[in-house]
Amino acid sequence: MQFGSLKLETNLFLSPLAGYTNLPFRLVLREVGGLGLTTTDLVNARSLLERNPRALKLIESNEMDSPYAVQLFGAVPEEMRDASQYLESIGVNSIDINMGCPVRKVCKTGGGSAMMTELDKTAHLVKTMVNAVNIPITAKMRLGWDDNNITAPNLVRALEDVGVKAIFIHGRTREQGFLGTVNLAGISEVVAAAQAIPVIGNGDVTTPESAKHMIEVTGCQGVSAGRGAFYNPWLFKHTDHYLKTGELLPDPKFLERVRVMRRHFDLMIEVFGEERGCLMFRKVAPWYAKRFGPVKMFNKRVVKISNRKDFELTLSDYLEWRNQFVDSDGELIERYRQGPMVPTFMQDDELPEVGKNEIPVPKGPVEIW
Ligand SMILES: Cc1cc2nc3c(=O)[nH]c(=O)nc-3n(C[C@H](O)[C@H](O)[C@H](O)COP(=O)(O)O)c2cc1C
Image 1 (cartoon, rainbow, N blue to C red):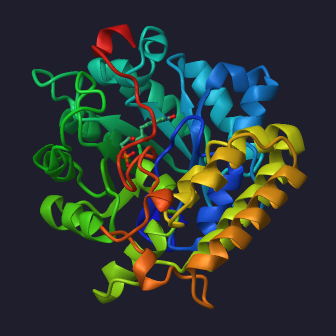
Image 2 (tube, helix red, strand yellow):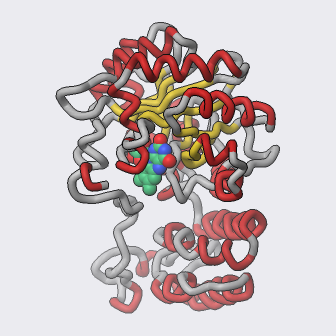
């Protein structure tokens, strides 16, 4: 897999998830393995030019997070050009343009999904960026504004002509928001529209099998996952292995899950400091815990941690309590696994089911987002 001259080790990508795809998360995914390229949350070009501290924090990276892309949004060609040059000058490997964000705040300035409605203007903006840097410029889009305006295939042709090096396509329209299922036929049309650049399919990939299915049905050259990676950080490693060998790797053991969660916590504190890192980790830890088995007492405490000591104590108390149900590898003894015989005090029925789309997405008519 190559984006222009940028060589990538796998054809698997992390989709930007504003509020989630921060440096600690990207580093954890890389360490687990399987990823070809990571991407930051979307960042406003003008804020970068103004060196807004929040924007600079969004693009923070280090040598372990390589190669990585920054996702830019904006509709002013000069700002997008200057921001691209700045990103290239600080070592960013690739720049992705957000053409899919359905949120009104982004669209009303002419950015995000609005870019899909004005092909000439968008092609001009992209050309300005492509001419200004040597690193690849890519675009991430939806199928179109709504079912009556499926503009992605034409847009892809126009963007390839002006030098875009790859396309990420989320198989929904702007109007759809996050509803319904991903339209694989729509992704196929985008794949067919591209002449030589890779098209990366995106939407609802949560397992190695669903990634393979998307590739087989649409002919896309790679797959990008957002929410699925948050639910399961092993997704890319297992998908890469499955695509290469046809073999499904076993789920990670409990102790490996705890090790990776701890590493995520350490990185969170390293990057955001103890106070903020702990606050942010409150929403991360329960995701790891979903596959720990009985976990109510851990979750109740971990969503209140304020410092490292709170976390360590919460975890060690939990591990000690959990010991009564496990074998020497930390795996639940047969009679405590899910099933009718599991005592009620172990059932975490108020917790969301594993694997559901639980990352909150905007709800209601897309017009009011
Ligand atoms: C909370 C959240 C934040 C998102 N932020 C971005 C973003 O910053 N840029 C972008 O292009 N897409 C963003 N998306 C869309 C995702 O990148 C992706 O296209 C979509 O979630 C479908 O893929 P998935 O099913 O693998 O998550 C976001 C989605 C969610 C749920």
